[in-house]
Image 1 (cartoon, each protein chain N blue to C red):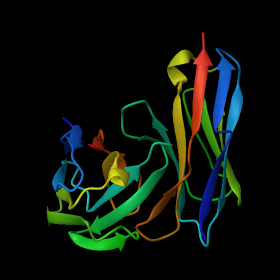
Image 2: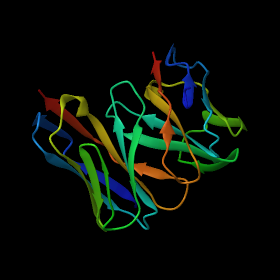
Image 3: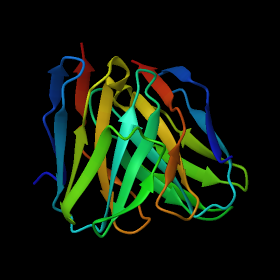
Image 4: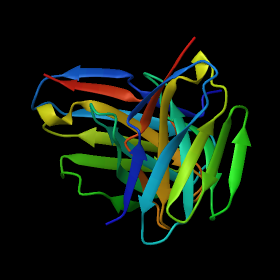
Length: 109
Length: 111
């Protein structure tokens, strides 16, 4: 069965303290891996799409990487406004996208 | 301009009632979705429509019936509401299998 697992469930960082979020997946075939950000009371907001192992994407303090079994979302020198839930999702080729449970990130000033 | 909109934002109702949630997208996308996010924040797909045709129905009870009058709209009707239906429901759209754009969500509370 296709599965997406994110770790840790929650992560507390001090402002400026870099870290990484993990998304491991077990799927029959990867069409694309997506990262979304979700703020409380709002819908998920798209961040990145990765299609093949070795691919990397960057946006401000965020960098997403992909291997054959997992993806990392690296956060460099985070700020309090980076606090949110980060969701990883995988599309295996059909119109079905499987989401992980998310990592709640808290960044303290 | 709002890309994906949902109404209502909050819905409080009694068990056994029937309710509908509306969704509209102005992005010109050909695929629309309904997701359910439970209290643990886990986002699970319910339905997927491509060019007004139902593509995915993820073991959702028959009490849930999606309707797509055109490519820009996907409504969700729920019959005989149960306590376990309480959740946040998100509508989303995408162009083919590309990134998805989500609506603001509808928080459904069944009493």
